[in-house]
Amino acid sequence: MLSALLVALPRVAPATPARDDGVLILGGAGKTGAIVAKLLVARGIPVTVFVRSTTPRSRLDGLPVRYAVGDAMNPDDVAAAFKERHYSVVFETIQVAPDTAQSYTKLYENFVPWARRTGVSQVISLGGGCGDRGPKDCPLSPVLYRLTEDMTRAEHVLRDSGVPYTIIRVGALIPGNPNDPAASMATGKSFLTTDVHQFGVTLRGDLSQQVVDCIGAARCVNKILVIDDPTLKPQLDHWLCKRRFETDTVHYVEPRCGDMPPFDRAALHTVDP
Image (cartoon, rainbow, N blue to C red):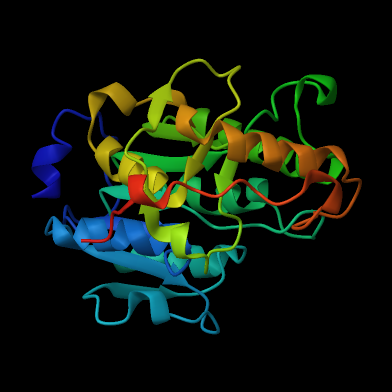
């Protein structure tokens, strides 16, 4: 039972009846969220996926998950999801586009107070790579730096709330295309470090596995962690090369950087159960 995994975590008094409805995944229909959902279901953990009504759910086909339908930027929709059932853990994996009216800060201002009010035992958040540093010390283009600054402000909303948290900062998440054959794969070589000055790189599969392994783990609670994989340094160097040529547009292809070095496919494995 998930409740047994979380028994050592501090809790605030819940405002709703004490029920264990498992994990709420905000953005669970995306690539990372779907992999995490599959891993959790395989462990027998109840999963609720928060999605917009217009969001495709094909990545979750056949998976016995519940759905909470709404817009995470709408406080009323978020409130309804938390009033419907009690969650032990919330995992946030929503992607906010750079330089739009939406923001991670607004998202966290919507759901974190409800996580506290209902006694959520752990919020797992994907943080920015280096938004707490000045732009000269962060290897991101201006548009992505503004996004990671927003993610850092959202981190503070969570950290100041009193809700037990795990922040996993992601520098470069590759491949960028979620439909790439490697998007569900893992090297098994990623690690988490408390060195927040490190700018890391990871495959989605490894990130998803690290998220699941941090659920209820004392080593992850109330920690800011950076995920990195040293075997992906050639891919990271290529990713950073593209950032050097960006101003206000994210370049998925940059001729001056050439092609991303190929993955060693023989060294990859799927994390889908």
